Length: 124
Length: 107
Image (cartoon, rainbow over all chains, first blue to last red):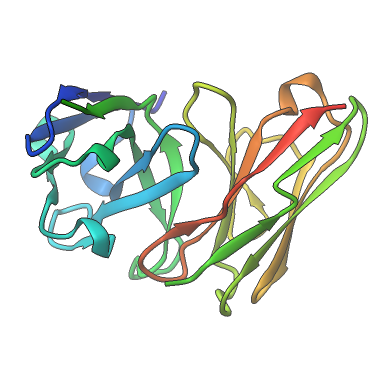
């Protein structure tokens, strides 16, 4: 069974940093693109970043470039999101999800399984 | 960025009803569209990709259609477990974007 479990959420002060982790099991982690999506309270999902299966390509929503960094360690079946200079508006549940390629060279990737999410609260 | 607009934002229906949700993209996205279901306090669940292909384990009561800029999700024979919020999402290009959601409520 495919499982994705996020860790690392919590309460952090504005300007602080946090590193989220997502551990995958039940599939060959190194074969899949992965993603982070966040959802602020009462809002819809917002895509954050994608990373290629080998980590060689990364894509970000423009509004978070420079503050958030996606990475992965395939040996540990782990996906990460380093979040710096956190703001109150970054408060959200952060989900990792597995992606699947809808085109041969993975120019288009769609969501498959999602983790249960981890809550990040930015507040003083 | 591609804007995804869903309508209605909410609807009321009864068990056994068929409902249709509409999603419009601000530009042609081909068939690179997915649909998700989300229940309160839970993670989104992937239902459909490529406009009309069901994800593994998703029942055929969910049907997606459309192309280009206009898409629909139809849910037939509503069951209690189908009352949830539904989102469309384009993966034609970056940034990936979601619709605002449609909440399907009990009448």
